[in-house]
Amino acid sequence: MKEGSYLTPRLENASVADAMRHGVLSCPADATLRDAARTMSLHHVHTIVVTHLADGSPAGILSDSMLLGALLDFPRGDRPLADVADADISTISSNEPLTVAAELMRERGIDHVLVRDAESGRPSGMLSTLDVAGILAWGEA
Image 1: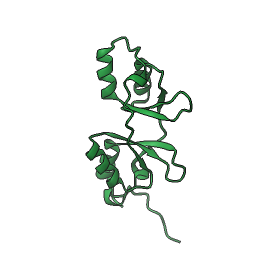
Image 2 (image 1 turned 90 degrees about the vertical axis):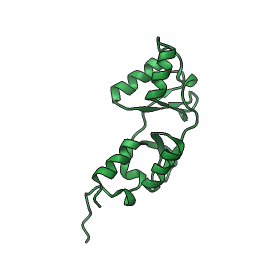
Image 3 (image 1 turned 60 degrees about the horizontal axis):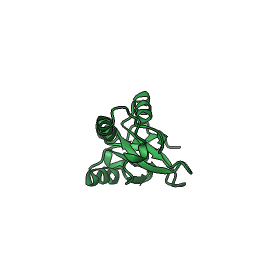
Image 4 (image 1 turned 180 degrees about the vertical axis):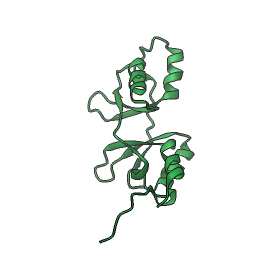
């Protein structure tokens, strides 16, 4: 019986699943900027998914820089997320090579990608440029 490796894979051997953060933090589209700021601050994340009210499916992405810009324009923070979230959601399958995800981020000029489970197709996590950097920094297998 072969023994498994507990080492982090090298970038060229890693999949999106090796680097992603499991679970998706979200707020409904009718939540306010203030609600999103609380969620992001409480969980120390830079991006959340904004969801449709009807079925909870992804409606957009809200990054910390989008939040900051919107809060400067609407300091009370009462604007609904539906008005400021980016509806162009970049997604990738969890079984894709990590280098494909990194190229997608570079091409689109984004820092986060919504990860979909390879089997179910449902959102299962987020991948950030910092997650990719972690694999680059610590990958040994």
